[in-house]
Image 1 (cartoon, helix red, strand yellow):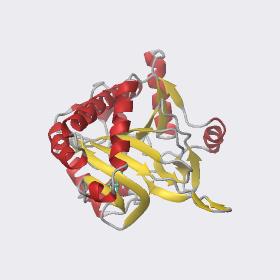
Image 2 (cartoon, rainbow, N blue to C red):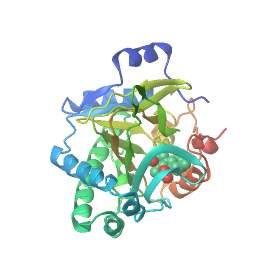
Image 3 (spheres, rainbow, N blue to C red):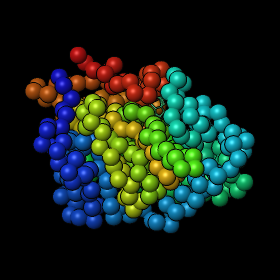
Length: 325
Ligand code: GA4
């Protein structure tokens, strides 16, 4: 069975009017329908009026910028990324490279407090700010997952959010810093469209990304067609991850995306990846499996999926390994 892909009319629409922007302050039933539609068509949408305070976002952004402004020697103290910690250019363990430096953190407060010592001169403040941001963004992710469950008419409305609410959730938070690629060779100005973070899908359930006012993110609607997602610091970009594609039996699409480092300005994104606990089992929700639409994926634990993820390259279609046929 083939995973649904957008038809030419949908593709034209997204090219002309851009990615769906969903106002969370609208009527709940309308919002859940719009979210389901966006996840089926694109696996991607933006949310506005999301309720995450500007203050929390600004404080997190400042901690990130302060960290990346440090000397390379200072930053290396928070590395190497194994896979958590500070990394530069190298992504994962299998030779993927990008024009990016990053900080990858587990969302567990204990892990954050331990890591902060090598990240900030004021580790207590750093942990507080990060924990506060993660809590706010996790709440938003849970709300979105509940809206999805409502729109999908599944029996247990918390079945999706429970995975990331769990104290043992394996969720991670990433700060990506893409330095400007503008070079002024006196009269000659070069702007390179270098790949900051190459094409991939996110392995987890749901991703919430917020960036500063600098473009770079692109989503792929089908192989070779890239749609730029204009930066919008007031919005969160939300995308379906592989685990949610499996849970919805392929109804939602885990969107392939990438980031370009092609700007005069430096881009920084702050990304929350909502994941299940390692021992959690992922299999298509029973309501979404019917004789007409049998299970597309076999059941797997998040630990199993993560192991497969890290054994492959960034752009590999790892969910294919878990197909039933
Ligand atoms: C992509 C999504 C998240 O950023 C991430 C990435 C992870 C990493 O940077 O360590 C991976 C990548 C991501 C997928 C394939 C593997 C693992 C790098 C890589 C080559 C933190 C994640 O969970 O998967």
